[in-house]
Length: 246
Image (cartoon, rainbow, N blue to C red; front, side, top):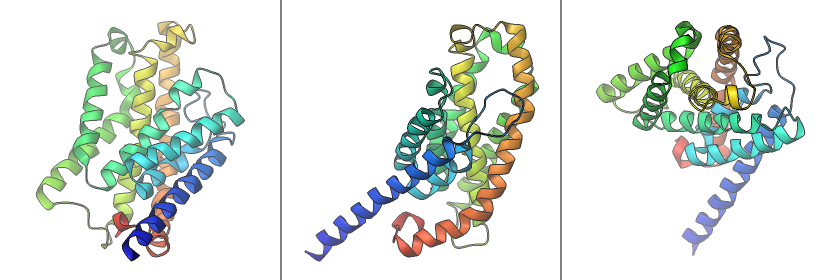
């Protein structure tokens, strides 16, 4: 009887957490983003909360909570109907952060490798500046280093002083997984032409701008999440009795 009541309490706790994080994502996504270079990568502020959502709730619940947040947030602060396709990147990024935070690097590595492969077999990709995706390449290198480290040392040690670095790494990998999905929709799926009627020359200019804008936003989110994420996770350990954060 006690066990059943405990499971029900944890279930209701979990649903409440999903709702809370969805609400936070709604608020951040419905805010007007930084006045950057006009490439519309994360035109709201959801990039600030998506990674920690995945780390706290886990990959699947993090995906759901972030998805609810961006769908409602984009409805409140409406960009255009096409943006709803790209905004699926935020839930995918939250999922990637959640997987990596739990040491499930293989799934994230398969995702990165598959989307890179699809991108580079697209003829247009070879017309775009290869350095335009330097931040995504860097994230892939970091992910490979994490994979090698986990093979040798095992899973993350959440009780160590390494936790802020773990949070920072998971944030970078999650956000760049979001970027990689947006690139997949834009280039291999040819939405640059179908949605926005851009030619290759215009896309090249847009690509160059994104190479400066996106890393700035990733850096801001990584710094804030590394600082704020640690007390947030510790708080949920105590208050919510979340087994996966212990």
